[in-house]
Length: 158
Image 1 (cartoon, rainbow, N blue to C red):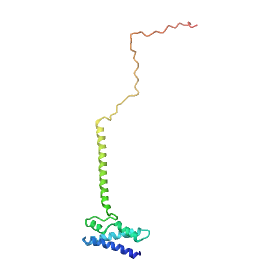
Image 2: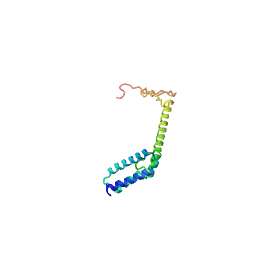
Image 3: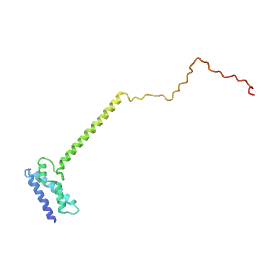
Image 4: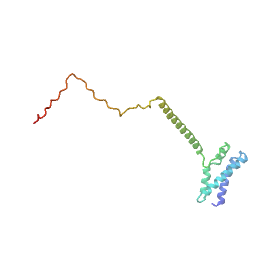
């Protein structure tokens, strides 16, 4: 296809968007079409080789003209390539919110546990003096006299 036939393809798609958004105020409808036209132009410029298939892919990624008009009608800004994935992106936001709530809850539990531990006194260190002298053995009398060594006389071993 030539550039003029590709331009005509884009213009037809934009006309379908404008027709689907006919109930919007004129300035809002014109802004919507201008934004979409600009997006298509940027996406076409990014194509290595501009073909009919490439332009149709760009338009398909933008979504159905009726869906785009409905989103504009409800005050939502149409997002390129949103289509049905808009529901998924909202689900992603809710998942992120849920993960954040769980993380904050867990951090709160850790902080509460630390506060309880620091107040309880369980963490106090008992000092042990490892350098004190060891106790000396104590002689316990048993009632039996200890044997006495034999007297040594000088020169007796000769």
